[in-house]
Amino acid sequence: MKLKIIKTEEDYTQALKRLELIFDSPVNSPDGDEADILGLLIEKYEEEHYPIESPDPIEAIKFRMEQMGMDNSDLAEVIGYKSRVSEIFSHKRKLNLKMIRNLHEKMKIPYESLLSDYK
Image 1 (cartoon, rainbow, N blue to C red):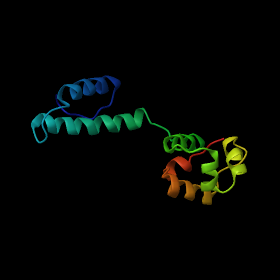
Image 2: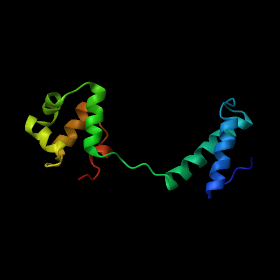
Image 3: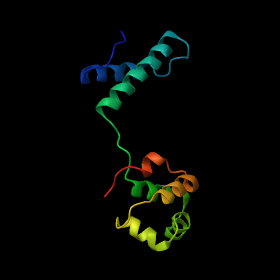
Image 4: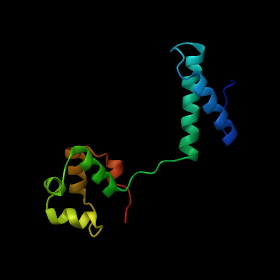
């Protein structure tokens, strides 16, 4: 396949099909190099045409709590008060800077997820 910038949906489809064929090619081989470049071109096209938005901060917290086996009492120890957990989950209170820092440091939730707008 002749490599070129992916500009259309048809180009994108062809690039995906080609990548599927050469995906397992050996590293540092002509097909392996083509797969690397094609992957970058596909990624660029997808970022522009199929952006993935950051999750709602509350959903990110709930997801991480589930991963860590935490309950609301555990989260209260991270953000301060148990009543705050209820207020935040019901969207009656926004996260403040101290809470965001604690959530990032203690639960390893990315700042980008915690700083997104939410209702």
